[in-house]
Image (cartoon, rainbow, N blue to C red):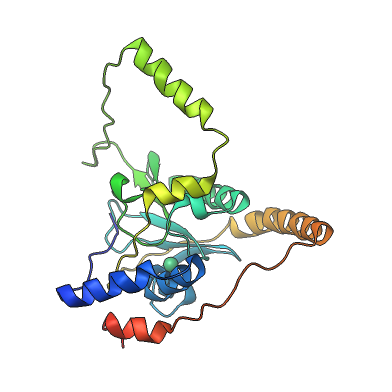
Length: 246
Ligand SMILES: [Zn+2]
């Protein structure tokens, strides 16, 4: 698995940082997370990586500490910490790329299967600060064990869970986001391994994406929607200083 360990910081530095983060607006927090995010640096090319796929919105790189050879991280270029933040068409596109890369690795790597995994939230084992989909090529007896427990649960429990789910189907994504309390994780640089990959799927996927984008633009024109992106007033260099990034 790929994710990151936090750098060493003193207790005072951590406290000061936590205070600053608390006072940030959502936009400021996003900018801050982006600046601290090793995966954003990989995406922008500031940090070297083995890219296996790239289009306007998505990058896929080889994990430097793979669970198996060919373990790929598929990431949106935009910085999102957790899944509820990602617009529907973007998450759809990310999973289309995952499907295509899974098919590619079945052909190219002589594997028999793949696991496609998202650790969504700290409680689910998420350690990377940038949303990603793991694609892990699998062979029989490769010593990876993803056994999902099979508990026994009474019928009424099942019904209770189903009711709770169907009642909240209309609830907003922001509520889920709040519950998961995305905490920025301090990145650490990674070493990079070498491997070769081709990109036969890129054209096909970007064509589909273009069509979608055009439709989206037309819709936006009609509704006259505004650009929600706004620059924060907070001094991010200041915070980078607190983190020892400067
Ligand atoms: Zn990022």
